[in-house]
Amino acid sequence: MKSFDLSVQPAQAWIAILGFVLFSALCIVLHASNILRLLFPASSFAVGLFLYLRHPGIYIGFTFWIWFLTPWVRRLVDYQNGWQDPSTVLLAPYLVTFITVITFLRYFPLVYRQTGLPFVLAVMGILYGFLVGLINLPIATVIVSLLNWLTPVLFGFHLFVNWQDYPDYRQIIERTFLWGALVIGAYGVWQYLVAPDWDRFWLVNMANQGLITFGQPEPLAIRVFSTMNANGPFAIVMMAALLLLFNTPGILRFPASAVGYLSFLLSLTRAAWLGWFTGVLIFVTSVKPRIQIRLIMTILIMVLCVLPLTTMEPFHQAINSRFQTFSNTSNDISYNERSERYEQSMNIAFSEVVGKGLGGAGNHLDSAILNTLFSLGWIGTSLYWGGLLLLILGTLHAVSFDPFVSAARAISIGVFIQLVFGSVMLEVSGVILWGFLGIAMAARQYYQHRAKSYF
Image (cartoon, rainbow, N blue to C red; front, side, top):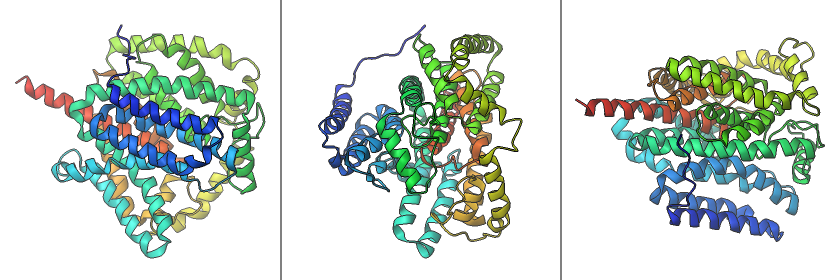
């Protein structure tokens, strides 16, 4: 069984990353973190650009980690220096990911008539919403919203275009999500048990601003969001990691699965649970029988590792109560509020032919359908959803003999079905959705090219 190479090569890339990490940590330890409000996004962008130009494989892993950890850094900075909303620290992952616009500008004229067309359609839909937004809304609001919508698509396009590097990217993504499950999963369990001061400070300020909160700011009452800014995005990232762990080699996947599943369940995010279940069904049924047997055995081992933890207090009551809401929605406040918003907004949304532009969706973010209609209108929505659906269909024709491709397909569809419940095509959730669509399409291109080379 192969194991991951833990060496720090190439040295230049790791010197840049470790320098960035140590500088950020030193600022926090010395209580000089106020300067990170500007220097964290600036330095992360500088490191990201260096990696993009010189070490593109490591750039992929760095981008995912910036998405994973930036909200946690923001909370530490705010805890030491006072609440700031919006926070400039949160620009870091958008800036790092937006670097891939270079890839798009360079390659889209070459691939728009080929399998890269869906990405181009989605970008066209977003740019349409951007132009409408410039007419109707403040420019700052529109630009921030543009980053939110556009960066996931650009990242997926970047992975797709670089299909020649698919084997290297596959290993980097597997390693990133293995360590991600271990680190952010362990922090999520600790967060639930302890409720660190900076997380409680953030929840209190969110509540004071009248914004959505995720449980109570006290131990055993938080809906786990780990190092991210909400339990929903955290659950989607963990869902992706847990599906990848089924085929990830090495003994480390078992402790990663233990803390990963426990924190995933403690997020109390039913949409992500449904996405994971759908993903497992797609994953297991889309691989060859020999791999199916191995996957089923792995699932059973992981269940034996995780099940005892979920039946113990203080975890059992919270998880069990949430599971019961699947069969009884009459007392489910979030479900009832979402249903009411759907009824109130659907007719208005379907009348949005032109749309309000990016940033104009208001409080309709609980539904990707409503959000796209309000933001992009029928014109932009047709382009954006057309591109997204073409990619989903494209992954169904990807190879089945590579378990990673099956996992990428399962993750993409597992996130896609959650579009009914929220705008998971944005922020880190969108990076997961479009990123795994991109890598699945890259694998399809890679194996097609390799098959042709044999003849």
